[in-house]
Picture 1 (cartoon, one colour):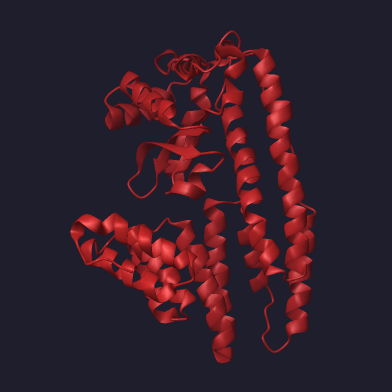
Picture 2 (cartoon, rainbow, N blue to C red; picture 1 turned 90 degrees about the horizontal axis):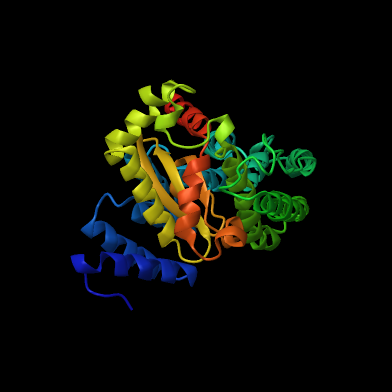
Length: 367
């Protein structure tokens, strides 16, 4: 049952649409997404979800139209490229005369996704599905997919080495925490990710779609844990290696003052105001998660964000990660107990601004 159109109920329409979609009631979901867009015609999330709903209803032309409308609003949305690629694949199967062109477009979109998320295994799997596709020769297509799956199966994720000793961040973060965090927690994410990817490769070669879908949560959680921690380690440095206040890094890395510090001051008023805002976000995370400084590619601005659990920043929000702070209790409890603000105060003493700046420059140059 849907409600009457009322601007006050935009979020209600959106949530109802998502609920109906999850229950496979696509027609009713579509009605509610339409109401959302009557109220806010350029609502990116509603357009994207309506495009996916159109695709579920096999209305592929309207689906493509909505995907293109989202890209007009945000040309750097990897979720659009991923879902639009699947529509192109379906059109290629339906319209045999044009299957080569449709699969070529799908291949281009999957490659765009990998520009934003280079390690996204599901996208790599889907991309492999487009290689050598021949609707008149399914056996040849399967051979190509098996070749690609074998290539993926040989890819194993490993625990990255740290560029500093476990005691390098003391007294701000203890050696005991660093060793447990790196050798135990991060290693567990890597191990579980590899196990899930092995199962996914098997499910892919067997074309077991249910297994592929059921493995996504494990891949997201453990893959996100691996991505997030890999960034986190490089974001840290001991005092002897330039860790600490941004203003104190002038002599070590002069470019900070020219670019990143200026960008922070422009966006937040001052470095101290930025830290306060960042800390407020980090403290507000309920349970486990991360606080981030990210780069918004469409506006070329900085933005503070939080992610829950081990959700990766870029695939969740589209922001390019520059600086991440782990606010899971395993990151600080042995030393700071449940006093997260004290941990955050110490965190700023060991931030590797050289690394954050390099990430900022890389992000700007890719726009």
